[in-house]
Image (cartoon, rainbow, N blue to C red):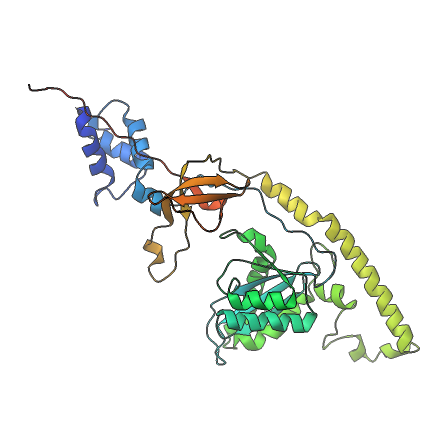
Length: 378
């Protein structure tokens, strides 16, 4: 605070606030910085609270700055399957460096029961290419009951919709921007990237290594079932180049004939899946995680008629400098603790799709500072 401060009349407060916050030299600084800068020169009644209200209600700041008071709703979970290949989470990973074959994306699918990973390298992310990959999944493991994906254009396209209708596969979509709903795929993408990186650094094309990386993922024991996805599906562990059979031990001698071998494998597979079902039905890992995360929730409390800004997807070369939020919009209807329906502020036009609460933040509406009339001439 300066040694001397000039007390300014109320009618000049808006000009001071604008100069110290919205001009290029002020650069839309935060509340405390704006308070400090104004206090160096000026004083007026309720200065901190007036500055706070002014800065928080700045449209440019609300449109561009991510909120620090992060709102977080309770975790949305899907029904846990009771058998293999019943429900798949599917997603796209990329774009990646274009390979010699022209591949730039990976179609990933994770079986929610066994956690088995299925990957297909793709030339592009268009709906036809993705539909072919989805059909390849079905041809490999059979028709499933349900496919869960985000609302990417490649998954909500007419092509994918028609394929699922022909195969009688239900499509479930996760809310936009809510990545935990596709947690299996998200974690898988990190693992695949980590395991591909050492080879791509050596100049090896990533699509040539993808089958091996997928295999390595599928033989890794799951934290929840304690079995690898491969074991849950097939009932035994795969052989490696260095295995018991390579050490001169004849495994065939352990089985008198084909039928005894099959009976033993069936019994073993039945035991593995029974244990996996016990774990999955209990949902120990997911319920513990859900309970832990829900303790951190800070759900946004909205009422019909509230003004809100909505987090939008910013793409393109200049995305770092683009506004992060769109709005303000008006809350038209509260559909559930997680979803609301919005309408345009000016036109009143309703949004076609509901919006997830975690994408929204409250709009601070700027109150007008009424000037004091010191003199009135007749």
